[in-house]
Image 1 (cartoon, rainbow, N blue to C red):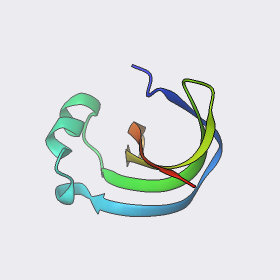
Image 2 (cartoon, rainbow, N blue to C red):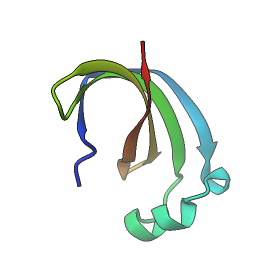
Image 3 (cartoon, rainbow, N blue to C red):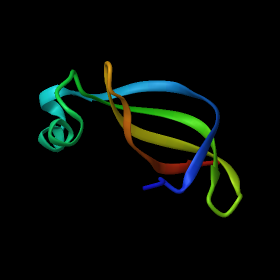
Amino acid sequence: MSPGFTIRGEIRVLGTIAINRSIRELALLKRLHGPGRWRKLKGEAIVELSDGAVVAAELHWYEAHGIGRRGMKIKKLLI
């Protein structure tokens, strides 16, 4: 399933929101993608929306070493 946007450029202003047991969806992540040191991260990037608009947005996603980024979503649009 496509998230409805494409990242243009690099993700910057990275920050960690939660690690392992602090993540509410940890059991689901492990069941779907496997065990790992899961982290919930946030960052800012320029994205192209499905309607063609190019905007700055704050993104949230989950990531584990050896598995990669999963569940990326736009949390809010930046002005």
